[in-house]
Length: 385
Length: 70
Image 1 (cartoon, each protein chain N blue to C red):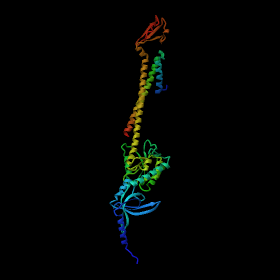
Image 2 (cartoon, each protein chain N blue to C red; image 1 turned 180 degrees about the horizontal axis):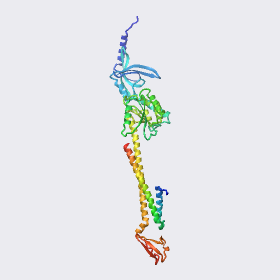
Image 3 (spheres, rainbow over the protein chains, first blue to last red; image 1 turned 60 degrees about the horizontal axis):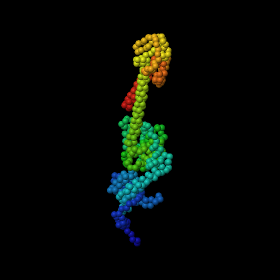
Image 4 (cartoon, rainbow over the protein chains, first blue to last red; image 1 turned 90 degrees about the vertical axis):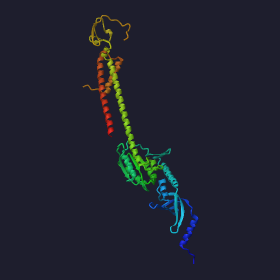
């Protein structure tokens, strides 16, 4: 009869071997996470760590975050702004453990967030390079700055009609509207809301659909605001999506982003005009209109100054004319002691016309002297008057 | 009926006359008439200038009032 042992005995041997070989040792492994099941309340997370070669799965081990390491997941999401979910690649520190009932498991002790950040950054850079390469007409890179058709569009002198893309009942929606509609200057704005989910796997496509609605609609908007605020800081992935970035870059209405994050700019931010938070986007619209009003006031002041200068100039010229006319009038001339000579009631300016015996009148300021010429002589000395 | 001159027309005539006065081109016989004419043009310009000035002041007040009540 063949020697047999019980399954428990076999399991004991495995456990002993595993303990001898792996007890007290930890390993840094690079793997893809799948089948992620988070139990936030109990602070546990079950998942599988998997490895792939040329698309084929080459290894898979069940893994778990216990309550004492669950914070690693939260820390990971905080640092990378990336939701801990199926499909992402992580580097983590694990310990091997064998349980006679539950089998072989990896206990995850630590996640190397920096590694994931590096992977994300590399993917992000690849997307940016592709955007520039495949869309040279609408996206260019100059001195590290992305110049797009959209972010170079001239803004309306006054921003009045705004299309708002945001999640319904979100903090972003509330903050944006509050800042805009209760602005201290009392400016009025018309805001059309295009509400959609802006997180999750399909968010980039949903945002594109809203942009398409805006583009096809009858309203000529002055600006589009894409805002997101509050809630989880994780999952900015939709805003690093190639299709959304490309759509924004070529969009015919200036797009402003306020998607509430403090790490590097998302790719959508780089294609549009970034303001970090919904409140800041709204504040910028108010400020833009305030600057325009100020410019208008300056123009008005300059205009009135110019007009006043012109009136003043005309007044001075008129005063000067009045003075010259007054100085030239016969009354002024007579008042200065000059006289006007008339013969037969005609003014005589040519002395040749005055003959000896002529009856002439000499007009002085207040009197007329009637006389007869008895003698004429040349003013040899040319008396200077 | 004689058409009333506008400011520019009146001032242009006035300037021509002033230049003649300064150059001594006006015969003494014509002087009194010309001076009377000049005074009429000055009055025309003065009246129009006052009117423009008053209108500007109203416009400024209106604009400031509109800004204040905005």
